[in-house]
Image (cartoon, rainbow, N blue to C red; front, side, top):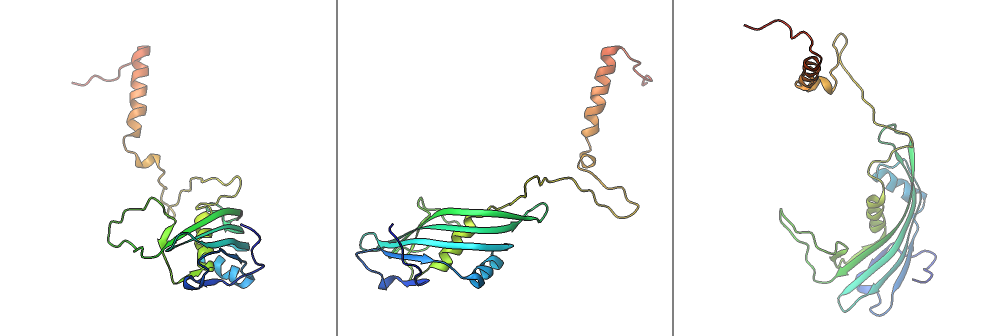
Length: 194
């Protein structure tokens, strides 16, 4: 890909694209658009976002979009809620095929090439960038040193239960170990049962 235009339209009608040469683009949303996307994706901040690439014809009834998504975002740590910075640099590829139908029904087999989609009337760069960003962000961001700990909660005057308390046979293992140790040392077997 060579140098894209400084900025380009956000939406392209597929019928209006050149059937012979690539259409280059650069999607660079302004601060309000980034703030709206950050709110949609539940981010603390989206400091930068850029999608640069091209849409080119690939055969008679196909278009291929290839681009690079770069972004700088902040997410809340899943343990401490502290800001966790993320730097995204991902390739983005979509293959649009005319006449391809979207599978319907409860059980749908996943295609081998998950970048293939039916040819839309309009290619929306904002939608593509938002989807690619959502897929690239860490699912469970953690601040450095943040660990999941154990927290016990109970009402006043009630002893809280721990995980060990919820395993009723865990004490049997300890008892069996004590009995085995006593048998090895010849300890008192205890009262006889009759």
